[in-house]
Amino acid sequence: MKQSMKNKLVALFGSAVVAAFACAPANAAIKLGGNNGWEVDYGGFINLFYNQVNFNYNGGTSENSSHLNEGLLPAFHTLTAKSPEVDGLKGTAQITFAVDSSSNKDGRLNKAGVFNTGSTIDMREVFFNVSGDFGTVSAGRTLALFQRQAILKDMTLFGVGALAGPDGGGTALGRIGFGYVYPDFRTRFTYKTPDINGFNLEVGIFDPQEPIGQAAMWETDTPQFQAEATYTTKYQGGKFNLWAGGLWQEETNKILTGKPKVTSAGFNVGADVAFQGFDIVGSYYYGKALGTLLFNAGAGNGFLCGSISCDEATNEGYYVQGTYTFNGKTKVGVSWGVSRQDAIKAGKVAALGAAAGSGQGITNQLLTVGVYHDVNSWLKVVAEYNTYRSNHQLGFKADGFSVGGFILW
Image 1 (cartoon, rainbow, N blue to C red):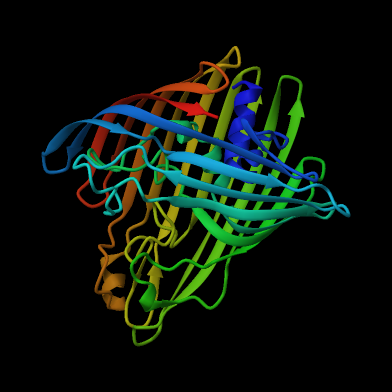
Image 2: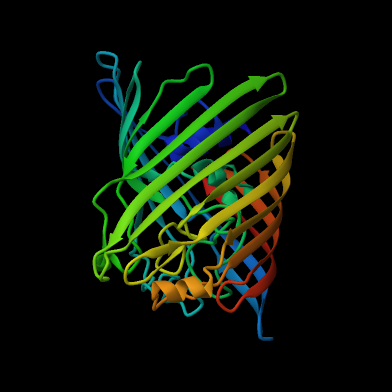
């Protein structure tokens, strides 16, 4: 990828992609101006893909789908303000909102069941940073730390990967749930150390999460904690990046008789080795009550509760990825990944007195082969072949091709 393309991606994703691409802070495509040492930048991108995918479901039914859909990323629009340095302090404020370029095939409802009339705005980032010799303090909403590197290193980030179904709207899944749990954009306070010979540590308290649609049943009286350590070194012809992260949260069910608690905890590790156009990435995570796609999506996805106690399922996953970039413009790659959630044994569920949740073990697998070509500094075209399967709910196997692109500014 050419440096100008890297710079735009860094500007659009803020501090998260600074870590992902190991680049210095870069200028956005459009300078809106500034005064008294302030700078205000605007950048963004829009993407769309044509997908031809065949879904085969357990039980013998199938659907061959022709669908125009955005990829893993929606359309991003980012406004960034940078302060002058005053008394050794620098400030950055950023707002990023996202909109969809696609909808369900019925033309009205998106995958969340919300009417998709073009007026829905997803506020991905609203945060500010204050930095100095001491490091960086950050407050607000941006990409979380746990599993952050896994998604930013994933080549399907600028592609499609898995689709949630043949007819859905909104973003594709990429490798979310097929190698890592989605870190999501979370509200938090974090502290990041200054660079120490390539080493950085970032720790933070996060707004705790409660199961989707069940917030009235749960109480979270302590923050969620996340941390990430990274190490990067460069050598002639390449670089090496190593990372590790963790998450911990506790929540109490205030409706059930014994007020049972769920403890979610996990760690992730990974490495990225680049040399002479070749790039190898490996990522692994392990934990309990993490869910498969989205952390804390709901009871039955990561845990089951009875009247007096809860049982947390074990979660783990990984992906390996190899790419080669020709002439700094065309990247070809292949990646394979798996996410698993252990079944909760029927006897234990009965002992807990659980009334909901299947207790079924879940395995999701995805193989992606892709070509990602930078036509110039503002145009990217992409082609992918994806084959994936899941035994979740009814279970399915899908195979498909996706062709599309991005315009970046």
